[in-house]
Length: 128
Image 1 (cartoon, one colour):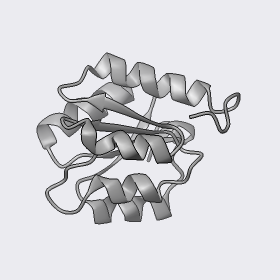
Image 2 (cartoon, rainbow, N blue to C red; image 1 turned 180 degrees about the vertical axis):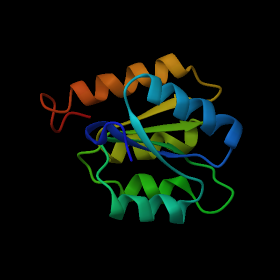
Image 3 (cartoon, one colour; image 1 turned 30 degrees about the horizontal axis):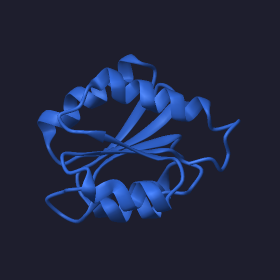
Image 4 (cartoon, rainbow, N blue to C red; image 1 turned 120 degrees about the vertical axis):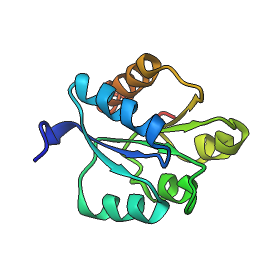
């Protein structure tokens, strides 16, 4: 069902007007995407599939993206996208391989950051 399971990304975003273009852009850049709209759906997806990265909104209508960020295995890069950077500062500090992309965001910047984080996975194991 997925085009490229080796590049499967979890996108957790409850706003369809943000999620839909993000998914399309990631797919255009060779990623397969699994989506979730709530923290429970995101947490469940983490137990069922192997992701190479996650893109997570912290403010969801049902639950908090923070729970998903914390539950994501440390080896998986996480991009937090939020309109409130202060909410992600602590997560970026305590969880390796976590970056903030502020809303409104650039799809190009987001994909570039994701590619950079994935490229560094082999050579920067524990460098934040």
